[in-house]
Amino acid sequence: MSASSNSSKIKFGTDGWRGIIADDFTFPNVRKVTRAIASYLETAYTKDRPVLIAYDTRFLADQFAETAAQVLADLGWNVKVTDRDCPTPVIAYNARHLNSAGALMFTASHNPAPYCGIKYIPDYAGPATPEITDTIVANIESASDELPSGKPSGSISTFDPKPDYLQFIYTLLDVEKIKSAQLKVKYDALYSTSRGYLDEVLLESGVQLESFHTWRDVLFGGGMPEPKGEQLVELVEAVRRDHADLGLATDGDSDRFGIVDELGNVLTPNTVLLVLARHLIKNKGKTGAIVRTVATTHLLDNFAAKYGLKIYETAVGFKYIGEKMRETAVLIGGEESGGLSIIGHIPEKDGVLADMLIAEAIAYEGKPLSQLVKEAIAEADGPLYNNRLDLHLTEAHKVAVIDSFTKNPPSEVAGIKVKEVGRKDGIKLYLEEGSWVLLRPSGTEPLVRVYLETNSPEKLSKLEQELESAIAKLG
Image (cartoon, rainbow, N blue to C red; front, top):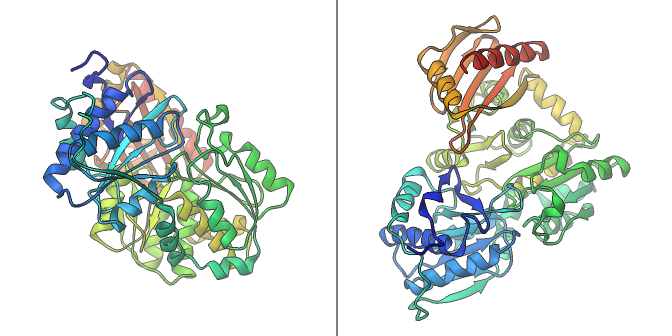
């Protein structure tokens, strides 16, 4: 192994490997991980199927992609590299559409500019399941980081993944209905891969559009490519100033959505999931199960019960939702961190589609988005109030907290009885009155995340105080 490569630093999380560029995310380590992926490909596919490679707008992402292409071609694979930076859902769709051996996507999603990442997307067009990533990780130690031989037995070509993806997206949307609504929309690309995709679909759908930050900036304007409140100040101001119907954004690789209503409120992913579940049933006549992660709102459970739909709860990570989508008919699957997919689509989260579905919902209903939110929450017997606490603890304290809650879970929290204890992912306390609490330790840092949901702001505050106090005592 060369001195510049250190496999102990290569850690795969819920969605591939991410690292800091020039620290652990280096060209030698990219060659190493690419060879580890190639060793898996040898067991799963034949070499008459191409391997696709795409990348986001980050510094050197295109060069890392080219490096991976050279390694794979050296090993006899025919490689197709996207002709520009590309959304994750777009390369995922093409992985299936082109009958490929899967795709490598170079992205660190919504992480800050110093990060890059790589994930492998199998030919079923969704995130790799744990057994696939476990195999790849097991291959890393023995994989070489050497330069390719320079005598490739495979080939490298470029291709445009956009036309086929857009053609498919238009089959999921009622473009004429959106056109008839004559919506005024503001779009903040956040320097992401969705530029040239989401804005093109919006214009095709006849909206009056103003776009921001639609060029590649590897520093993301000094911010983060994350479509949350602090990054969307300019979008919110534009929506309010011009009385727009809607503000839209995506994260860096466009698999997560950001949505602003006509009043300038940034909607939570929990709210968006609920609004779209209702839209798909009420306006589009769709049906199927609802799938959510353990950390996502139980308003979806209430909504599912109203319509007699099955509800499935998964561990955190869209790969688990995608897996369920491949097994059964899923109306909508999503997570509180901002990813969703719907029936008829690929089992991968798609921020471009999510944003367009909200525009479509407004067009169908002929009502402002804030009104649709109120109606959806009321129909699901809401509101429910939720929060997430990120508690930075020492490693020993973190272990003590999880150990205590695992072995001796409380029988009540803030005076609310615990009905059931779930251990699907972390420790989840299902309380009476529809309240719940989830403790999840971070796998990569000394941090415990505490998610809470209950039916009043007062109860939420009490739950937060009591949990923080109980956790502090375990230190």
